[in-house]
Image (cartoon, rainbow, N blue to C red):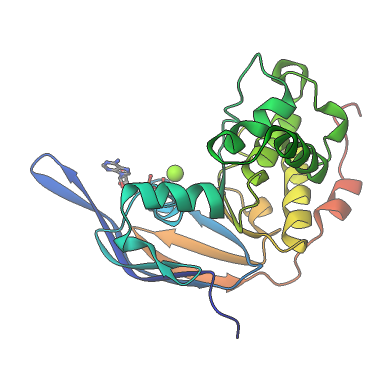
Length: 246
Ligand code: ADP
Ligand code: MG
């Protein structure tokens, strides 16, 4: 068994709401091996986003430990956490959050502006990231000239440009039609095969089945944590799906 890339031990999270506090995570234990592909499911309010925010070093547990590549991030200060976010983690959200009057290539380059990488290397990395998501030909397009699925792929390329080891995606297909959603899962399966660890939140069982493992949250606890048996290949599912033009 290889060393865990993510190790979450007895994590609790409370939110202070005036006089009372809300117990959003109630003793979470998760170990994630490198090259994992995990789908997080559960009803609204079950703690999925709270958990993702902790994984993403956007928030800290109230108690418990979180080790990221063996580093106990619970003890790091804000600047150190920002450094980890920028170097080890990539984020994708339901909304694509692209800058409108900015080309796909420039959108993808944005996270490199906070690094010491020079201009030529920036362009090279952004071009490579766009190629990884199948958008090499669209680098000069503005977001308004791209479909929703293409915009989400630009957002994925942007998340990859600093070469993170983990991609965290909170409902990345929530705004997309079902075929486009499977196309995004095809991109994720491809990236995962190249070694990227992926943790993705989804409401849809059809989307979760493309992951290797599904963790279900309920009332701030893990209710189920299982390997996916007979995982379909998104590329094959797409061949059997109608296109919008049909
Ligand atoms: P999910 O993503 O599964 O819908 P969340 O993690 O967003 O669930 O929320 C878990 C619980 O914590 C919910 O009861 C929610 O209302 C509460 N919560 C989430 N974020 C905050 C916050 N910033 N302040 C107070 N309560 C919050
Ligand atoms: Mg949520």
